[in-house]
Picture (spheres, rainbow, N blue to C red):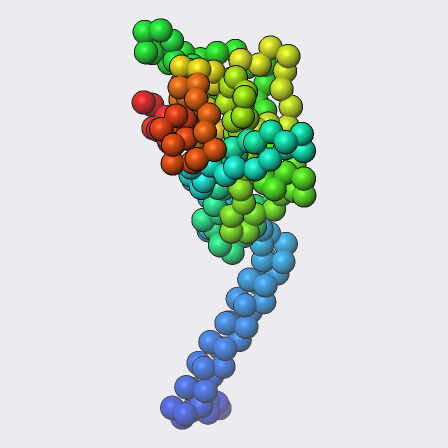
Length: 219
């Protein structure tokens, strides 16, 4: 009977094979990961760290400026913050989706709106209607003109029957939503504007005449 002797591997050779196998496995996994990220990278990143855009108060005290016809006007601003710092929000816009007006009984009731309308990005003359936000952007939330009869939300367009102005003694709640490519905020941000009909270019005095406050959506 012929016997075949199998060569024995010493412990050093055995360890070398194990290490080599681990390295080859890691290389294969890394190559596969690179291929996956190249093809589905955006999808993977969106699942691991999704966009989160929030609307925050920015300048609710107001800023006084002057129209070309000499009239003074106070602008109020909000900020859109991107909490996902590694990913930019593309084609971002802020929409006015619902309006609720305070009635004589103090209760707020929804008033008609044909379709959602977009707020104007600030500064208006230089900023397109769709923007990319890596950290934050700003919108003109509304304006009150000297000698005017109402607070006016700053939108790109208004229907002829728009009822969302805040007149003397009124209070209106504006429900805002952020939209971007592949993203829509799950809840509205609600801001209430109340005005007593007075105008003053002293912003400390004006803060007693017109108030803007963020409230809970269910308030």
